[in-house]
Length: 318
Image 1: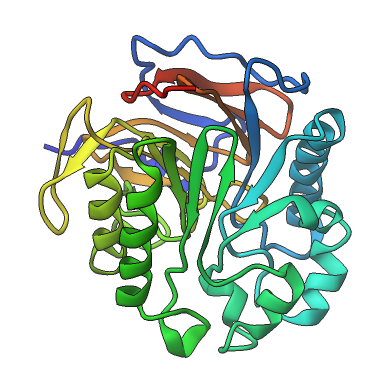
Image 2: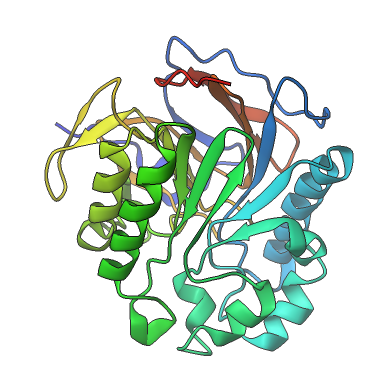
């Protein structure tokens, strides 16, 4: 049975961040710092759904941008990521006025994926891709990690046929999965809690499920998504059907982080495989090592709300 949460949590109206879930036994992670890369570490830091452009919400986007910039300034090897929905309607004016002055300061060091709001003004997505310089789907090798960035949108909305991306992913990952750790990023989550904003889990399993399957078959460690405006961390799971999965040490851990500045979405009911939910804004940092990855989610008040460490299943020969 999916456990319920209170009406106050569903509305997301508490002054303090809403935190649901418990810490796993291995959650002894590093917290938030801007230390330079050591011991083969590669740092990724970011969020998704920065798309609010006015008033108080704009100030949240500026705060999260400042947090990311502090880490990038301190560590020239670090990268930012954006899990989609850069602005509210994806117009060139919004990108120049709202995004460029905040997260746009480090766009040359950002891994981008297209979100649904990014193609609202321009259904082809050309405005987004011209601004970011990103490809529709691509991979990047950073240290001992291979990172796959895929596009959830359909071809008529700036995306690519998902079958094309799946075929490319299968071919590329076969070259790297034995020599690198694998992570991925796209906009729509495969799993999510029941959302007060939509009254359902905001997921698209038919569209992104085949990608998860390929990643699962090649031992991927974790996945970063956005779209749902809160922080969620799931147990490692193996996908068994369109919407079903089982917890497994051999599975993939999914992070949802639509926390870049947009209006927050409360929780109506918890997915039983969700380990932690935090309804607030902030950024997530991943430190990627040859033998493990560490994460920390820090809110806009500078408080570390979640952190942890996971040893990778694969032992790399370096």
